[in-house]
Image (tube, rainbow, N blue to C red; front, top):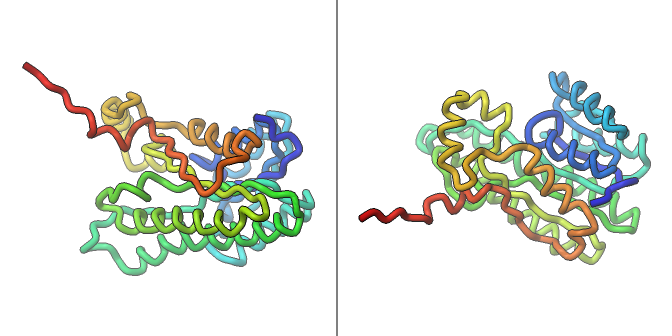
Length: 258
């Protein structure tokens, strides 16, 4: 999968799944523009790591949760590269609360950060791609939370379900411009955020119960993003690609004992 000469934006790309996508696209030859929040502790290190691969990489500090921040990201990329070919949209915010206890402002923040910001960034990039006139690739990082109502995650579940439908709607409007719009639905992925929520022992114990015997990695998601951003996926649009190691099937197999 050759992405040489392609200009790629990865939002939320300094760590975790976003970083996995940025590194995978860089290894395929793309020039990388990574966004992360202002004063991100990881952005500089990730930029240096990608530069060691021999790729151009620029970090862009901006608040992806706002329209102004999204405009700032695109402006910086166009100033440096003059175009954009790929967007991996990976903004998200999540805190677990039971529905009865969930603060209304937390629900609204989750929708804003996970769904609305994806609209803003993708609209701005899509307008640029249409202006360029030679297609493009947009990949939204969704989640199995979009299809499984995992408790207690009402805010995140709702945001990711909305993201999937939004992405399909965008795909339906952009196919005439040959802009592929797809989604990746990660399962349980071993990220820094998960390491804050679970101990090493818990991750190892619960990972062993999954069909693939482990949690997924950011590299697993990066490989999927690389495929969807390549010409190999030219005939795929409006499609969720589940990358979960069989997580969604984990309760489908029964063991029968004499």
